[in-house]
Length: 105
Image (cartoon, rainbow, N blue to C red; front, side):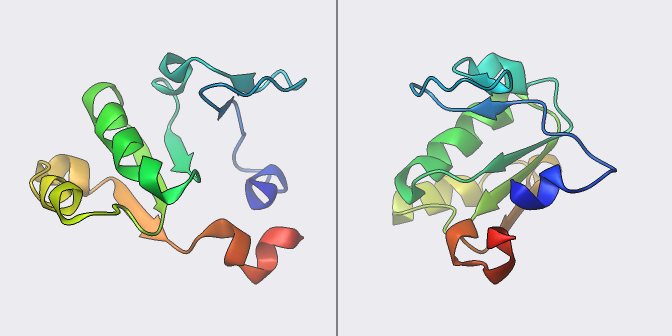
């Protein structure tokens, strides 16, 4: 998120957490708030990645950028493989943010 906040060509409109309450107007506990965004970054515990991808792909038409790993078991990986191509073309995976050197800037 630090990288995005320092850019002038994008905004961080919402920061979703299912339970956490934070004194920041961008924080939301309502995942529906994300559905009108252009892109969503999933940077949550590994075992939640697939659940978020599955939830978002039902109601969200934007891009999804997810930290690796996308799944934590073979069953989820097989379901991910069966997603329609139009959804897979908007789904991206990369390194786990806490391990990126530049995430601390």
